[in-house]
Image 1 (cartoon, helix red, strand yellow):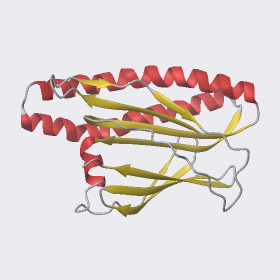
Image 2 (spheres, rainbow, N blue to C red; image 1 turned 45 degrees about the vertical axis):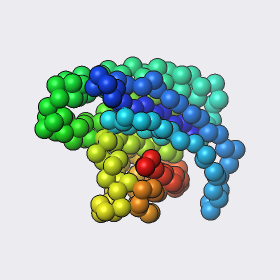
Image 3 (cartoon, rainbow, N blue to C red; image 1 turned 90 degrees about the vertical axis):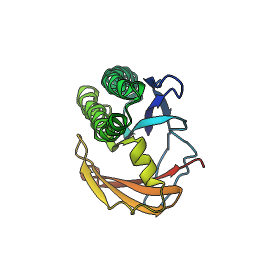
Length: 213
């Protein structure tokens, strides 16, 4: 299982918005049977002055180790290049709004950033399907993406805002992703389930979003 994460951050003095370097982390498990759990003591994102975050999670059942390593290396390069190009455009628009000190425009820009960031995360996730088809070293069992703006992160960790409803999406490789909210306060917990009909599998990952107060 691989996490691919990056953030858009704003300089509190200049208002400039930049994309942080791609952060990756791999977890390996020999086997996970029905009913078993594994601890993942890992925080993909820890940052101040956030504008938005993008996290993609991929998981495989590996048949060929060499081919898998080649795929991950090539995918990582393409991921970073594609993400940098997409987010550079967002950062440019947001920097103009914030740097101009136009409150209304800045607020609108941050609000619009949410769906744009989510769309960018989806574009990157779609790219994984091409690598599966090209290398075919492993069967995808987890394929999930998260794209959230500062406004959305704030709402998730605000106890006065409503609990999000369940969402269901289909990944580019045909994996059904079901997201359920578990608890909500200054910490927000959700369960993200990845269902593969081809592999007859269900893998669930519990996420926690915390607000520093």
